[in-house]
Length: 116
Length: 114
Image (cartoon, rainbow over all chains, first blue to last red; front, side, top):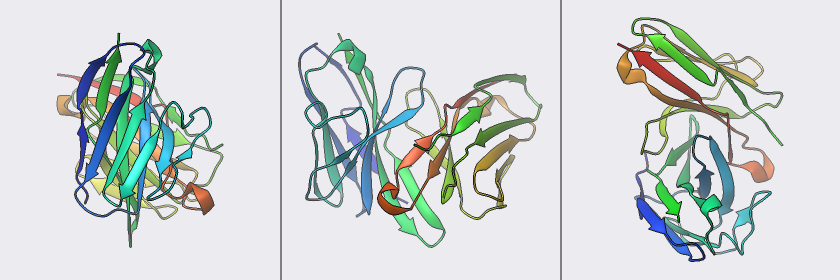
């Protein structure tokens, strides 16, 4: 299994500022992803963090708003730029390990952002 | 776009009752995962089902993957208050550029009353 650590775990942010969330995995993983979970809702994929290249964004998410880095196989960052109250969410990092019994995808504890 | 319809959205039952949560899709998934999420925490993986028709048991929880790999169910026997939480199904399509990307159902909020 993989253990995923996210920082910060919680933060209260001012409108118009940007915040970078870090995701550290305790082992090398094939893929890393970033999800958003708005209050009372399920998870929505923001993007796939590609190692050494630009992230692949899902419909409705753009690089200017959510720049992502993945400099190596165990670390990624997500920045939430120019925040507004609508960005108040849990942001979750996930990592994919490929095994004989199929793909196993693990999640971090999440970063709870409140924008005021 | 792949969609997963999860039902019911809310479930409130008494301790000792049985329950079933369903996930249905018109799309085929290479695997399907069930997660449980408690307030203030990230989703915790319960099980991954890969083979059509597969049944997996985890203590009082039974997971089934449909023969066509388009649907899945989670059955809990003799529910306990500790089972309370948000249950999420998520499908993984390992084909092409979708490798490892999860499509989540809407979630089922389960409350088990003592």
